[in-house]
Length: 293
Ligand SMILES: Nc1ncnc2c1ncn2[C@@H]1O[C@H](COP(=O)(O)OP(=O)(O)OP(=O)(O)O)[C@@H](O)[C@H]1O
Image 1 (tube, rainbow, N blue to C red):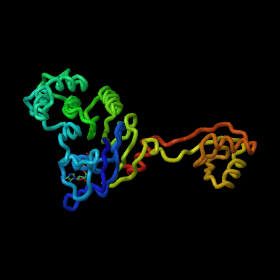
Image 2: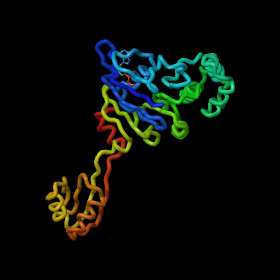
Image 3: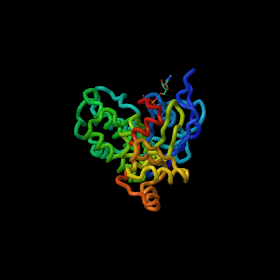
Image 4: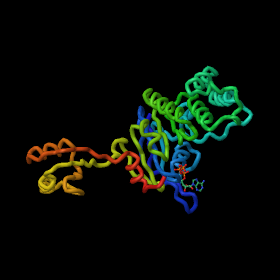
């Protein structure tokens, strides 16, 4: 079941938190929803769930708005924040209450507690749980209805490295089952090994969307050669952008290493070193989002 967001806009008085935002997230994919603090990720997800009324625009799940879904919690599971637990209830009590509200069988409580690791602290009152445990309990609650769509707002918050590694594997498994997963973060590294696609926003507006590999930008190839002058001249003749920072070193833009090697061979230029240089994904992301985090 695909998610479609179309022209979503939200103004809080004079502040426009989200402006004309459109994107899609497809079934079987993990879509990373990225942007610095205050970019509008939470507001967007809350609008998708009908918790905030959009100024304009729509968000649909398989063509229906959240409010029109016949049994919303069986279609869309959401982890928005890990507040809202009754402090005296145990984690298991909490799941039981939500299972009853959603009319899901009690066997589902044990299943979701087991797969999320909640079983390890199921008898503890929620007021004693760590942030990471609360995240797991929120995720377990979202999974009660076995929904085909999951919206996860910064689910790594509060998880230790082991928890983050677990979440990564778990989210990939959920997507492999054919679910549609939208997962927000302000840190690209957190979703880098999880997401297939990304939607990047800044100041409430779409910056870019597409496969995560598209964030890398164009490649640069570093070449060291005693005939750097000759190679630079030949490449520039055909319109290639070449920087020449040292007498024997070139930075060649827009060609692959193989293309550079072929060009060098055709002009009998000796190469001592040829290294494709890519910005790290994090550098590309910081560049796109204006360097703020
Ligand atoms: N209820 C509200 N009233 C007024 N302004 C709001 C409200 N909710 C959010 N905003 C503003 O909208 C903007 C977007 O906030 P939002 O929480 O959606 O960003 P975010 O990308 O989720 O950030 P973070 O990563 O810090 O959670 C911010 O400027 C925020 O102050």
